[in-house]
Amino acid sequence: MTENNVWAVVPAAGIGTRMQSDVPKQYLPLAGKTVIEISVEKLLACGSIRGVVVALSAADAWWQKTALANHPRITLCLGGKERSDSVLNALQHIDTSAGTDAVTWVLVHDAARPCVSPTKIQTLIDFATTEQCGAILAAPVADTLKRVTHGNNVQNTQDRSNLWQAHTPQIFPLKKLKTALEFCRAKGLVVTDEASAIEHVGGSVKVISDRRDNIKITLPEDLELANLVVQNQLYFSENQE
Image (cartoon, rainbow, N blue to C red; front, side, top):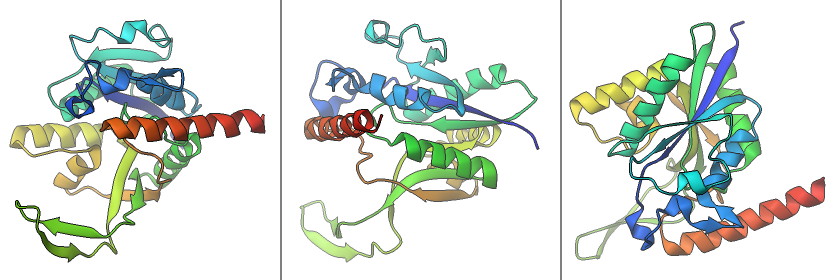
């Protein structure tokens, strides 16, 4: 059986204007570190991951101040205007480094999702590489969903029975994801996550049930919640050793 070659990609070129901060959200303080440090450390702790490629803005002035700036398993690449551009740049970098002696898989994770469970990361990798299919972490939608008009009036209630909230990481074979993103770029298609790119080219994506606390930091109040989750994870990790 061909050995699987797994890389991680962290698109981190965004500004995060909704955080109302002069500092990009991935560099905001969280549990004694920065958001991106905790997110990337979760990936580095996974022995299945060969290396992590972080896509940064050309104007990034914060990465070199982090504790991970010179980590031997981390490589930097230039980010793009959109998230999908950053991911594609990272894939092109990996494609030239991965070699041809293994099936190369790419695990893409949001820099602003520091609460992901390391166990879930490994479960996702094991499932995708064993079943040889693309897969994402996701959680079933629990809240009642309302479709609202431009005047903030409720139009109707949506059926949530088959709806899932997509999280990251998301894992796909490198060649398939690269081809899908290039197709979407050429066609001007909207790509909100890696799974949506695969969907645009008719590819299959499996869902792996995730913890609901794998939140994405988008608004100021998210940072407070993320701090509680991370501190709780640290507490239980320290007390299990």
